[in-house]
Image (tube, rainbow, N blue to C red):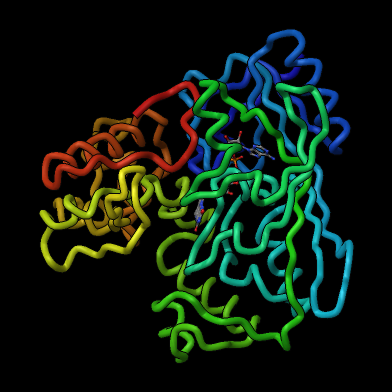
Length: 364
Ligand SMILES: Cc1cc2nc3c(=O)[nH]c(=O)nc-3n(C[C@H](O)[C@H](O)[C@H](O)COP(=O)(O)OP(=O)(O)OC[C@H]3O[C@@H](n4cnc5c(N)ncnc54)[C@H](O)[C@@H]3O)c2cc1C
């Protein structure tokens, strides 16, 4: 019998205990076959892509992990300057972005350097630097575990929100470890627009030396996004513990404008629509709230395994939003840091932060 696979070997935080069972699905049909039979037998299932947005319990996973291990990117349709690109669920996302940029296709360049798989990008409507996948994603092909059927979901049906979609909501609603819909492939509609793209994010525009809304060459945008991200520890690097994380541990809180009014004038806030009663909502910066509550870069806790002072886990030394493994952390260490930060922010500002990664078998 093979030794159990440790989830720490398949997650970017490099924590998590053993999985009771493990299947590498090498094609969409292998994935469907595995999901169909596991769901029929009632075995708990965890679908895994790159493990970059999943925090696994130290106790491991008592069911079967189905890793989506099939990749591919293809141009499936071209009409005028519009090109439909299809990515298989297990496709490495950044390789796919690099491919679209090399093809001169506009739309995904600001999402360069995000770890993980293409199939996971619709789950939390992955985004960065003023872009998110909802801007260009047209549909997904998925296995509907509830209906036992293959389905196509359009962007409208995916009900995208900030780091949210119907897929993510199904995960929370069913209190399951895998969403109702398992994405098998994703279609994006991109444009051949003379290799330029409007830059939507002030920091990126500044790095590029253009005004927000101006255009810049795709390759240049990708280069600068990767550079900016690396400076924040947001590009995976095995040698750099600041990147042993799930990226941002907390989402930016969306709160009533009245909450914003209680914060100092320099607290960043962006309009975020209205609630059901017509009250204005604003999105705050979690990084600002954390930093100004006294948790600066590198904030850490706990003695190391030899009892010598020093942290097994800490906030990244490059960014206050990432909770990082300094080399020998367990999930409990990461959660201890995150919990201290969440509670400290709530005590200081009266705003509760919520985790961005999916917590499996553990809680904050
Ligand atoms: C250094 C770093 C930087 C990051 N920066 C960003 C960023 O800028 N913006 C951003 O939005 N995110 C960011 N992330 C988070 C993460 O990279 C993304 O959320 C990514 O899309 C997760 O992909 P994955 O394949 O690793 O997902 P996994 O961790 O494998 O899975 C995440 C969740 O999605 C489910 N899932 C996975 N694949 C599928 C599928 N095919 N169908 C249905 N459900 C599925 C899993 O069951 C799990 O619940 C960052 C993470 C790291 C480590």
